[in-house]
Length: 276
Ligand code: MF3
Ligand code: CO
Ligand code: CO
Image (cartoon, rainbow, N blue to C red; front, side, top):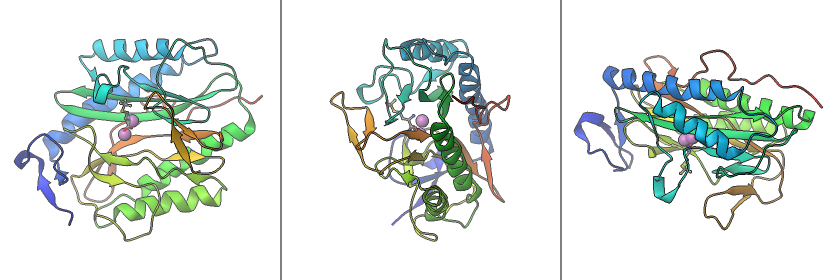
């Protein structure tokens, strides 16, 4: 059975319990969430045709270092980069490398920074130069899927309400929801309880309570939902090689809804795109 615990009464390691955070935590999460969001804001001017994903990774590391924030990805379960860069049919956990981006690509950059123990986890899509209308539509549907999931967050709702809102919308747009990865509790722990599934039924799963902090990060495909992991042990791709997109926010449940910690500070979050 699911149980809840005041975060000050639990060890700082995964226990399966759902941590309930307080105002002191919210202050730390606002600070690191803003840094993560500002990093993604700054990347709008960097993610262009010809840039390599390694250069993006270098930028993310330096951005954090300048602000005394450490990338949580670095050395996480053997991962050796500071962010994930997932291009086109890559669903998530693409590894930065010395390979250029090309006009027409869509790429997700996913960053998590740590400051004073608090983790801010967020990702968004970047169109590389002009992109096709079909690609743009996938970005729109995926961003809207995230926002519909967020709109379901309030005390008394359940994790299933979030997943159902996302699945209902994405499938109504003839897209599919990846099942193999989910959102997660976050705060003092990078990947904590509960799992936030991006599909499901209203009323199912753990109840949302004020003070919970978690991510919602739907991966939406133009084709079928199936994924496979490449031999590097990280890169997840669509089995049918269809395009995949993802947006992610870190948020907390508040008295009457939620507070998003990773909102864009200059309204570039929903990246305007140009057509080819
Ligand atoms: N940031 C990812 C998430 O949203 C996790 C990346 S773990 C890494 O949960 F090791 F691949 F970096
Ligand atoms: Co996450
Ligand atoms: Co992330």
